[in-house]
Image 1 (cartoon, rainbow, N blue to C red):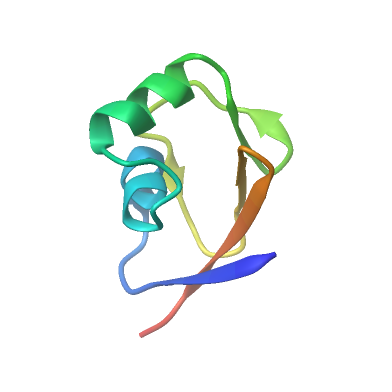
Image 2: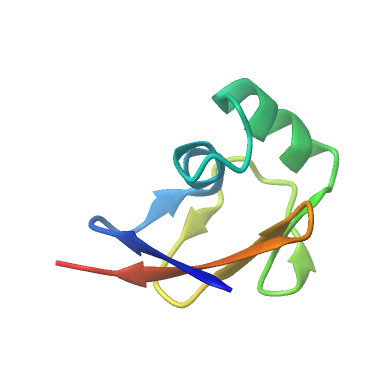
Length: 71
């Protein structure tokens, strides 16, 4: 699992997917979230603006990342 450093909490789920290149655009990120293809901490998440905080585990397309806060 890849750790992703975030400098500001919380960060919106769709932005994290886009910034980590798990999708090619913000629009695609919103689409895959709406389709129920993304999980946060093992639970399907359909809210595009779900607030992600340090320790959250995001999974999409067989790729897992964990958000870590870095000052």
